[in-house]
Length: 239
Ligand code: BJW
Ligand code: ZN
Image 1: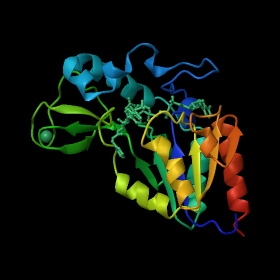
Image 2: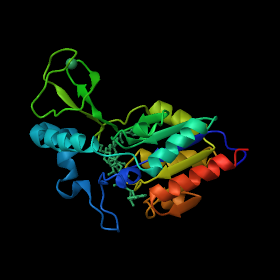
Image 3: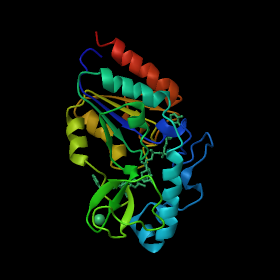
Image 4: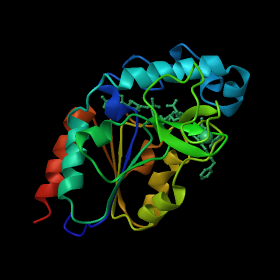
């Protein structure tokens, strides 16, 4: 622990589950899954959006409204505490489109799959903060076109800021994955990238993820318990 300077933390839906935001895939705990009501290819691909924009816009409007009623949980707060106190390199790469890391106070956060609270104008290619529905086709504040879509990354699209993520992974001494099933690439491959540069790799999850065997250490349990305990350990070992 004493030699650790640069930390990369990958978070997924499991970190927000205890805030009341459904995960995508149903786990063995039988918890609610966001995609029970929909086929993934209907609501999370550009082709699905082209086929039935009302279905997709309605799905995201519902989720955008829902996240604004949720609060960060102890896992988000612990990561924000680590961000505030860790003097070395630190990057929280989140696959989540909610803003709970930021609302807990974390600053070094990168949203690789976009953000619910942003809309992307496909006419002028600008992004604006957006908290209201999109289904009634509001106009872009920049160019006036009715061409706004949720600013999220769907299957087949390139996740955001990959250069920044890979640069952080190249320098990482410690890679920690929290609350992700390891089912979606490229995020699921980060553990291997981190291993290649010699980082220690730790998984914190309710159950073993699909890529669990790649991690040198796995701790199973709820993020709200595992993450604060791990953060205490990391901060205590600094001195
Ligand atoms: C708890 C807990 C608690 C519960 N405490 N834990 C074949 C092979 C390899 C790749 C591909 C392939 N065919 C296609 C691909 C590529 C494709 C892909 O990965 N497909 C797979 C299905 C195989 N990927 C893409 O298309 C990506 N783009 C891309 O690859 O571009 C090319 C490229 C290549 C190389 C480099 C760079 C780019 C884009 C992926 C976009 C994903 N988008 C979504 C939707 C976002 C918008 C929205 O919100 O609707 O992102 S999909 C969805 O899954 C969402 C999530 O961010 C993502 C990951 O889900 P996550 O977070 O892991 O959630 P769950 O529900 O799966 O898991 C939750 C976990 O938490 C579980 O393990 C629980 O046990 C645990 N948990 N409660 C702790 N309390
Ligand atoms: Zn525009």
